Length: 537
View 1 (spheres, one colour):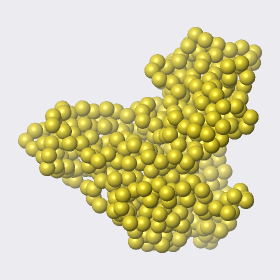
View 2: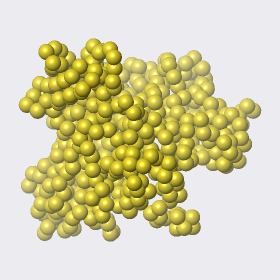
View 3: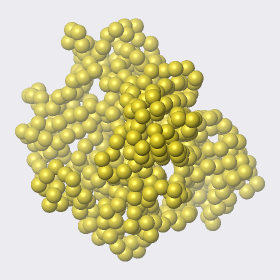
View 4: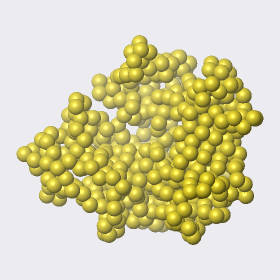
């Protein structure tokens, strides 16, 4: 903490980590706490969190010297979940409430009447790699892939009382699933993507797919009335999987998406040396993910060459930087998926060794079907996020675009932030803007701009950002029904006075500066924010 106070880094323990001690002390003794193994919490940080939770029953995957504390009871439900602040807030999906948050950690309280089964329950064996290496930590922290359900290995749920069972299932291909409940049989159709299946359970239910699919999680609530079978396809998230293999001196990476919401996403492949000291980046490649089909990347390490294909057809890369004739050492590859400017999924692909300039060893990581949140859900949102638009999208007829949602995100939220916690002068924000192409555009040469401004009652600006609409994917390249996330950074002026401010959104022509009407207006108020002096409630 002293280092953090007097220099920009590095510092292991910061005040928002230390503040968790007081929160942990308030939790009941012997309560069950699931502790995340995210890489931002590995090593000494997770060890410190485990120490703060002394006397509690700690579940999770804890790295390095604290591995003996790793534990997860199959079929059990933790009472609290502590995640890295950057992680997908999946506890909210199962009815949890966010109790506390800092810029590093978020704590959720699970509902008391819920029985929760996570699909991700197995750990990877990493005996073949150095347990202290970044690659092994990255692989191990994932706690295994999602559970695969097959026709020969169905999912079985048994309960002593009537319950409403909600299953979240992920599949890359459409298929049918049989639900067998005692003597009753129901057949449901799943589309490619992530589907929630809800049904009433009297005693036992079996989920039998026609092809392998992944169980994301299962949640049961006690009930007096058994509900009929219903399904709901989640358009805010995508299902994905990846595979990597060695072909002579080439590495071939294949990625597939099930993307029912037509979200414009990006793939990033990075290969780094497997060491804590003086890391060497062997490759970084960035590509637009296809809305459907298979994306394949071939890397020739001897020549430093790369080629990408979509469904077998060559496709350009947005960026390509590959080192030819890499030095002899161990490396690991990572796949990241971007939605707008944010990484929504990140996972290790492989470890490899270069010896004598050639690929001597290659160990791929096995995936089932993973999930990623391509856009924020309608409700609930984490405490550091707030939805500004609700209801009818704002349509820009001239550009054939619709503004579907705006989410205000605090980049460094104060300790214990709630949705009602005011902003402070100088605070940094990230505004997630979700666009959707309503149809084909007539004038694709036009490059529209957007402006987001924070104004007071006298129209003075206290924050402003102007830039190209669509950011990395200009609107001229959108296809009908494609959904694009744009991330807009805003920083409040340090001299901003306490009070209420409106957020004004403007679309305008880059050549003339003229506003392009959206929702019939030249400028639209999309929300309000409250600013208080630093430290005030």
